[in-house]
Image 1 (cartoon, rainbow, N blue to C red):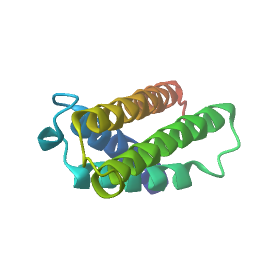
Image 2 (image 1 turned 180 degrees about the vertical axis):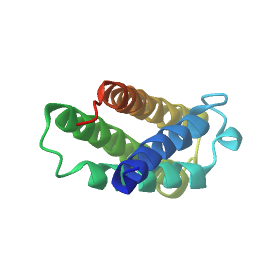
Image 3 (image 1 turned 180 degrees about the horizontal axis):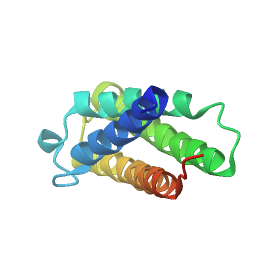
Image 4 (image 1 turned 135 degrees about the horizontal axis):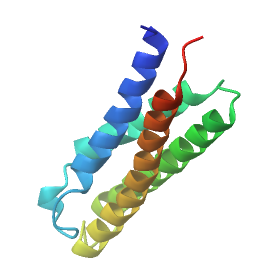
Length: 128
């Protein structure tokens, strides 16, 4: 067993599941979307992105691209949340929340692609 592959797979799957858990619920209801889960998704996606640096294969490049997309979208979602709850005088509205969740859903799509790539790479791996 390759510990590096285990850690890599762990963070890829954790990023996807945290992202999925955050997105589930009514899109405009802030009570159903935990801010700490969003921040955890951001942190784990950044860790997964860092782990993807250094792989010089084509599939490694696509892994990195999907992770960068997910991380950037989750950071933008967190910034919209911060804007809505701390800067905007109206507070965190349903409109802000819908924007945050829809941006996070885009990150979820990138994370799903990353998981699919991980599974395809694992299935196609041949022992030498």
